Image 1 (tube, one colour):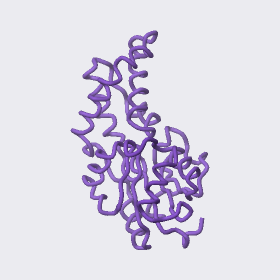
Image 2 (image 1 turned 120 degrees about the vertical axis):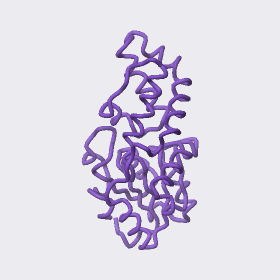
Image 3 (image 1 turned 135 degrees about the vertical axis):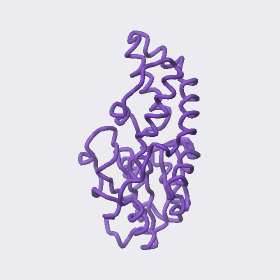
Length: 225
């Protein structure tokens, strides 16, 4: 990847710019309490994050139900899903940003990208309304020309569609648009779209070491970009 050829950047949100694990834990445990199911620890939630709310809810329900009625977990998960998702969205909307923090170096990294003249978009699998509210709450919204969430299109990362749409909105070609993320989701989407990709080492990546992911480089801090 040649930095001089980069004209724009697409930046992930959870695990890349903001540590939102506390928000996930608060919202999910509120949901579980509403369903009279046992609470879940943040360390158990971490590897479940990154593929959208629907996947997260399914995994959490399966985990919670396995603690109570293992033989019926699959059936109960399907039966509870719609109500669980509604309760999760209720709780997340109420606490969005309260138990999260911007990672060190993020503001400096975004400022550096802007100073280079790069056009910026945020593409996340979080629902777009929650993503926009979180960026605003953390003072990061002003950096981005466009914000897309997991419900913005019919496909979310690791599919390349959101990246193609972001490139179109930014007026940049994929080969000249850097993707910055924290997981294999981001890297797979970038590779499929033809974008160069850098991954941060401090994020979630479904609980796996990010060093094993096919990327063009790793960043210990976004400020190092």
